[in-house]
Image (cartoon, rainbow, N blue to C red):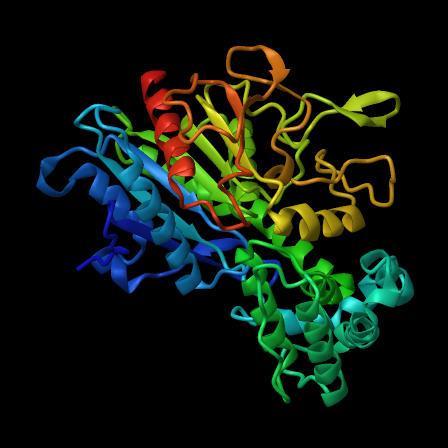
Length: 468
């Protein structure tokens, strides 16, 4: 018997799991899945399901969901369930035909360095990769401009930064580091640094991996940012974390090419005469999965057309879809965004293309920005670090930057849907590009399950179906 992820408020979700066939650098391959029954692999079962749906009710659409960073299988499953359960009740009465019957598919790629056993391997190579990282004193000065007002934080940073260079995930944090961190927590609590993201004191003997996991999980959902959280995360980010994060950012795009596109192609091939409509959504680094999949689809010239494309709180450069990036040039010529050709190609992206963004997303607004600046991710796909005039902001904090050529062939700024409306517009134009300003309702990086994003999801689906 095939076992999907069961939902309360919406359809079941079928998750397809992948791993690399060689650690760190191998090709992504689908895993055998006991939940797929006699088919062996979930993708094969889904193809059979499209051909012979239960009860004979044809699946009209396929919706593919893609998660972001730091997700093992249970955490990814929780995300998928939260999204669908949050959005499904938001469908307005009468929106879409009564025969609308989607098959919801979710992909999982190994993106948790602790759970997948890659953190130690990456950490072992971190020292040689960190030569261009700023000194500890420079990092502390950047993070804590008023050091006299936060002496405990400065002391903690002075210990955590060098420790992070060589510590492996199982390394126990020394007592003096634990004491310094707890003193910085107390210092932040006495002021306004904790905001609404409190963190419990660190216990003696806590491993470096457990500490990282605790802080990252907190950061994924915070609704405010304390200087202490930022500082300790940067202790991980420079230099070890930037190596880890950049590896997974690159892996996300590779996963889009090697796994998600072939999956979509195989599902479309199940019904070649009358394939279902396809839609795709990604969150965080999952927007890199989606974007690279769409670009690979365009280059291959044989994949399905995608209707709704929803990029939620994207951890990719805000200039990625721009026709040109005005602050960058090569041999005097403007540089286009890495995915600039995708929105104009109706055979790939029927639209609408929606991106949510929020100034309150500190994961993208601060942490992604720091790593992107260090690595030189500005949107072209070509790294160019240490250019002070460059804009390294993320899509999930800024929306689409620059002009984008939409499905109508018009080169224009993305249409901005403002934050003040209680509900988002009921329709979007198919083939159009929209930035959805969510600062009044997206309070943190993972806060995308509410009715406003749900409304955008349904309105985007309706526009895509109407334009198909």
